[in-house]
Length: 142
Image (spheres, rainbow, N blue to C red):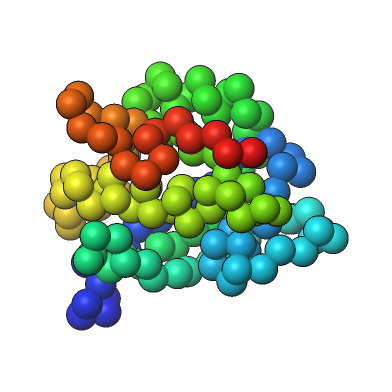
């Protein structure tokens, strides 16, 4: 691992078919948008290192799971996970979505410390009495 990188996080982007999961991935990693981007067949994968609150995290991001919006929202609520929407087309909320995700994980060392590798991750969308980050958990900017 790079000496100045606190941790490497694995992120999976899920959503309905044709909603722009690959476009979101490309907007965040390469700051590009292609309205003619072909549908993903198989898996798309990118890596990007970001800094949040002075901590660097390497993100290994996969896009390959098709889930409709209501199913995703229901799953996130059931498991107290973040549910963040963003627009790759307009760039609204893209950086915020990834930064807030990393911020929440870094604030909860048990989610990323080596003793917990290969275990499931449970994120609360907001701690009682705390601000909740830039997007505040359920963040719809479409």
